[in-house]
Length: 136
Image 1 (cartoon, rainbow, N blue to C red):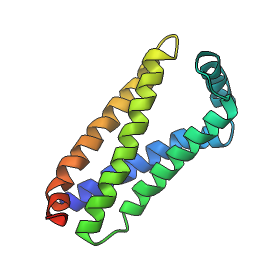
Image 2: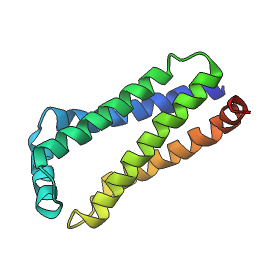
Image 3: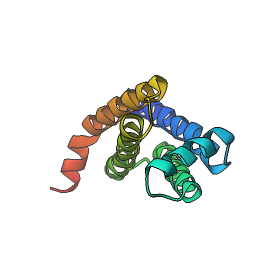
């Protein structure tokens, strides 16, 4: 049951990351506009920043998908931690942008980030004993 629930969370996280990565990587107008605004506030090149964030989100999404195929419990625990640390960092960065860079936070993005931070915590707790045992 734990593995099924964990795999569903991994799949949901992967889809979530792909949903946000693809518009950036495909230079959708909304992403170009958003990152152009960010470049006015932050000392960054808008296009490089947009593609970098999109690539990070794509990598995290692919890591989440890879978790579905790892069978060794100890390897899965370590990979889960790495993937979810990257996801948590991405989400915290998104929240910082929402509250400190955007003129007004978009409630839907804040809600998504909050929900997926809870998923990160669930996954950390689910695999902590296996990860600790790996290093003992």
